[in-house]
Amino acid sequence: MFDDEGNVARLAEYRHELERNPDNIGVIQRMASMLRVAGEYGEALQFYQRAAAHERGDGVANALTPGRNPWGIDIACLRWLLGDRRQALQEMHGMVAGILDGSISYGDAAGGVSQGLLLYYMAVTTGERREASFALEYFKNRVDQLRGVHSNLLQVWPCPIARYYLGDIEFESVMRAVNRIPTVRANPTTLELGRRRKFVAALFHDGTKQRAHGDEEGCITRMRECAGLDNTRIDQEWYLARHEVERAKQ
Image (cartoon, rainbow, N blue to C red; front, side, top):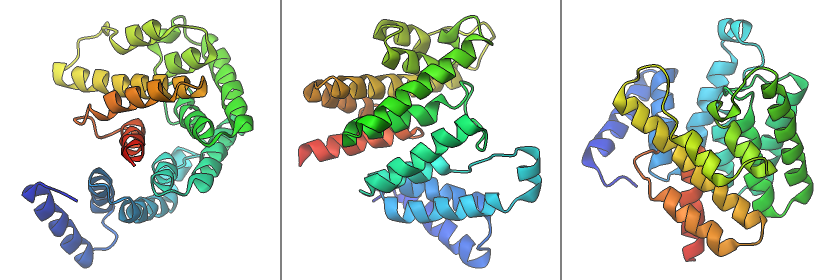
């Protein structure tokens, strides 16, 4: 649980606020995030489900953005962290299939590559070869679509990771994409956080590729490096890497 008294107090404050106003979506979302950081995955899942139910009932948002799948990735990954791997895999597969048939909107600049990356990790880790092949075919589909729109795919994150899985580029090219200097002036703090987040994903998926090739030691080494970047606690890959490291200790 939390080792920071400020976080404990904030969590108590949020609980009190929800007693007064159970539908305060901002507090529900903050609770979900804080509980996940603390490793309280079961309760975090409940709050993400509450947030998702609230957003699914938002008629205006649904009309403006049809095909939304609010918090779907977060919910599937929390199921994985709680040990319900089969359900997590099914939900992630459903998101990828939904993107392909148009029933789910993308969720990232690369046309939904993020969902495919997580599906591939889950498939490789559970030994589901058919799902892994499905994810690789999905990467080909996404990359082919992006080629018709973008002249430089290294600039469309996380497309470089998908191309790395496909064998189109080496890991060095992924790292060039991580460290790419934008052409527009950016806030240095925001830019540094953005790079760290990309670095987390790059390390995690390099580890997954090593696992896919039978190098479990190399995989866990990468997972440790990824989990060591503990100031990025935003992305699914960081939580999954932390989970991998904890399991490796057992």
